[in-house]
Image 1 (cartoon, rainbow, N blue to C red):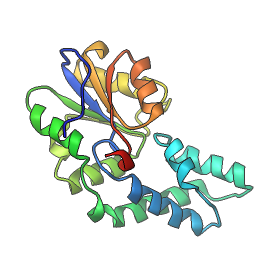
Image 2: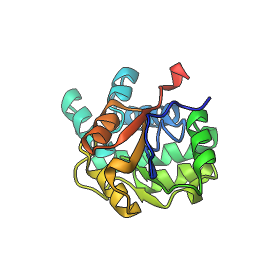
Image 3: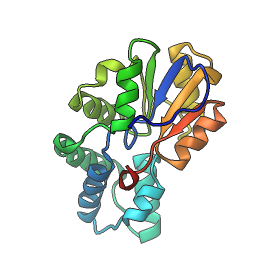
Image 4: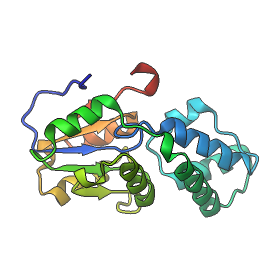
Length: 196
């Protein structure tokens, strides 16, 4: 079923990746739990979804503070990524979003704006055979201020050469929607896995 879109004559689509293009949040959560469990950390599922869109390093730093731990941030982040890559075979595209990609590919330019690493985004899109659909990938490290700041989406629009007001964002998190709104872009909210 196609996701409903707001009214407008949009000239570019910008997509979040995890939970938006890829139904990868359950796999990410399993990778998080296993990586964090190796250090005695806990990550309740409700908090995982509430923190959707945050940078991996920020999550580890906050969990260290909340749980009185001193997990090595880079090591835990790398381990989480390794575990996620092992689960990529289980990841599928989000049907309502995939239909929009297929219907509009070649008609308007597409970009990805994600808080995930370029390695993770590229691996996810490659596993689904979708990497070639996107002219621009804006990933963690490409911008200084993460969502809900609009910087990533504004960069995506600039790289595509499209005015922000002419961009439509596909997002699954509150922080991502806030970033799209702050960038002056229209958006389509992707429902969480349990509502699809």
